[in-house]
Length: 214
Image 1: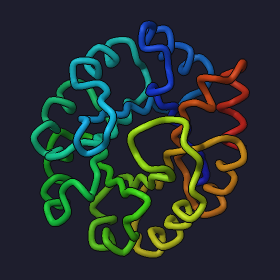
Image 2 (image 1 turned 90 degrees about the horizontal axis):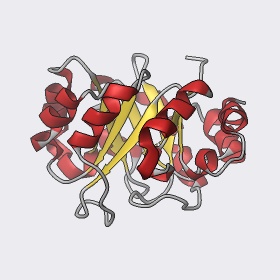
Image 3 (image 1 turned 90 degrees about the vertical axis):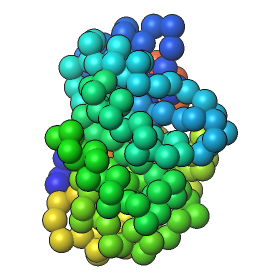
């Protein structure tokens, strides 16, 4: 996979004008829209739920990349799948040995399944599961809030993850992504980038997106 997928995170968008923000992303070359779902338990922040994803689906013509930063994600997959998610990514730390079960639940809705790992989680912990997934999301900051500093060591996990793969799986990075850190990620084999502040605080969204592709 040579193409770099750019998935702007709406966590940094204007929540009072989400439809307009989605259209701006589409018009300026975003590949996916990344939706951060937080429950105030698994991570300290609290964001949006399935009804918002359902509303976004009505106005969004590109894939919705839904990232569940929540406890017991298996209880909510149906809601987010039926709301119109194209990809649902859950955290390995929230399910551990139930990972295969959760992947199968997601795939039962004919959508892509992703596994995410926090900065403290070693790649070998998910070694047995990576080929079951469609996407591996490496957190390059502690999940929960936007605007944090990129952790270079976390991006290096992509090298180990690639060594475990026997098929094409998207490797995504999320946290502190800008034009410089994007280069670091791509050098380690990451081919999907989530960026929030960098894109939405830019005076030219198209240029910001293109700068991430490199």
